[in-house]
Image 1 (spheres, rainbow, N blue to C red):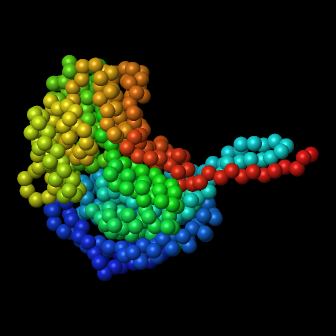
Image 2: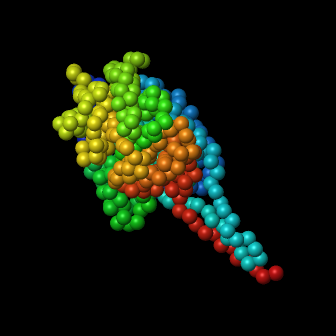
Image 3: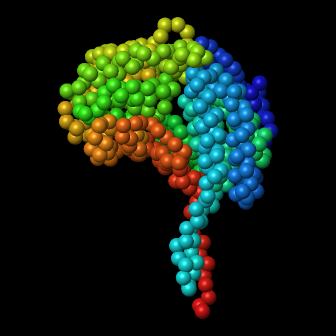
Length: 468
């Protein structure tokens, strides 16, 4: 039986909800549904724990290092739960506990900056950073543990306490990690709860949290922003993306195809920072389509426990239905199927790796974020036109440019209206580098020192000096 962790102790509920295994399409497990009273208890527990947790930075560092070790020690259990609830291939699922340990170690080793602004005969004025208090964190289903730790590690290092809710599609591994955190950290420092959209809405409007950190869709992020604004909670919103990748005329097409297609279909295409639209010059368009199709056709879709599997199923039935609908819509509007083209026959939410050619703006799979293993390839005649079309979207998360001339590619990449640009690579996201989006792809940043400071309030400390 899975239970939530509130105030360092298991917290069970009468109401539960189904967790579906996407490999079979059948109900795998029951997860607890947090009640409004339990949410209040979790918030009160975090608020009480904050008073002592914020005081001792060295103790926080040690606790975070202990937590990293505990997660590594329980990695097999966490990985197995991820495979059951998300359908990730084992190798992909196993990366998430490792990411958690890496982020904890990175932030445990980070010093909190304190800047001297004035140091003269009149005053010593410094800029310090203090923790905000209780953080409400809401995480998505595509990387239940890894993206949770993007929030937990910097929040803890800064001295905050947390109430965290996972997606109802993938609560199991999060509940296990909640149990581990409850065993290692002082009671109330991290409270792990589960439930549906109503619980998330109750968290963002709750009077206790001083910050909301949310990862999810643009539509949901806008609701979070409105709800949080009522009492001026600080917010970090990491939302969707429709990342363009522009191949220049001198690009190494086989190399770019292998790297871009492999990245685009990582985790069955279910990540916000992956390439979602490929722009290819007309003179090399057919060559590009053929190269991408060859890579797609080489990928194996199947059992997550089979080491030969490259792609598991889509993680949720709604996402499976959405990708199926988007591909069918593109085909109905004249898209040419260069590879794949539809679902895999049989049980579960499996979809064939798909490359679509002869598409353009105005088709949904080009204009919207597909979040699955289906990649449209667009042609362009002029690089200025390609950049303008790449930018003509509400999204602005990442983008990349591919060329043998890195300097020229960099000049073009810096014209993209995105939070992160890449040259001859895409979606490399180390803990030391800030990550965030432009336009509707989000507010604020995660990771790096800016990510740590986003969990703090800047405070000027002004010490007057007596005249000499």
